[in-house]
Image (cartoon, rainbow, N blue to C red; front, side, top):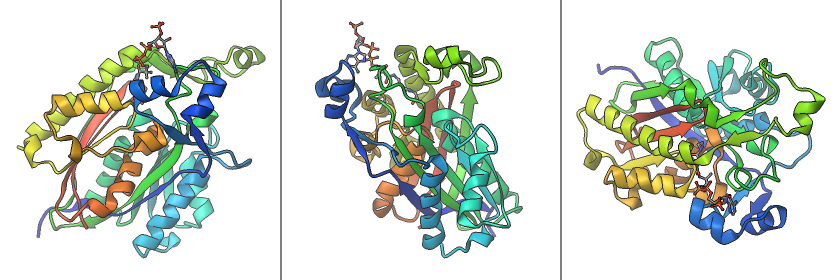
Length: 329
Ligand code: UT7
């Protein structure tokens, strides 16, 4: 009997109905469709505008799809990990809210805050609970309502981000498929370039922090761009080496969707064909923890059992990493 791996047995995705186009943004800030398209590749993003709805509500739609697709009852879920930087509340964890909303009475859950690398951190963590034999039904979600922390008067950030959620069901398998290996990294010195200035214990919310717009995403784009390309390429290479693979053996590259120029640079540096790179940034923008599972969800029909996938991401923290997995179905 082969080693037990965590196989992805279902994938789900959700984006809100409302669309914010580049033309809409031209009316909000000093920008153009041409600038946004050529500098980022983004044409539109989805925004959650329903009053009273938040990150957990998008994740709930994903969990419902996962339960349906994998023929699972809510009470069979044992663990749910939610990667997000936009939790419904500072506490409790959004994972707990999701579990409550779907009626998962026998599970526990927790959030992982690793920004755009959150899904990879959560996928790797969830896989370990399966590989150890501890659990048989683990859900991993990446969900972010970036519109709740984006300043729509800041043209350098508001053009990038969108709202969305995706996720996977993990179950044990011994047929050689599943999540095989990850290289995950972080470098806290990178927080200087990508962070939210207030709202944490360092600088709790005050009238001044609100007036100074310190509860929004701050990003110094250029250093993040450079670190993102290097971080993703280097960890992909490390995962390849550790698993005695080369890029020709990889069927799909699944990169974080932050900027089309970053995606192209990573693909070029790995000498990887463009048609095998999953891309949906033009439709959704950067949904932070949502980008990777939303890619898997959209490309699901093209995937077949045994396909070799390399997932890679980079985000605030800095956090980054790459995960190698073999598709199960
Ligand atoms: O997902 C988490 C990790 N995040 C990332 O990976 C994002 C990484 N960074 C990026 O994707 C890019 O740096 C940005 C898209 C954020 C910015 O693109 P850039 O090519 O690095 O532009 P820049 O910041 O160097 O700005 C170039 C020019 C500036 O004008 P000047 O100083 O040359 O006159 C900006 O003020 O473009 C200007 N600019 C804009 N112009 C029109 C900045 N934003 C805009 C805009 N519309 N929206």
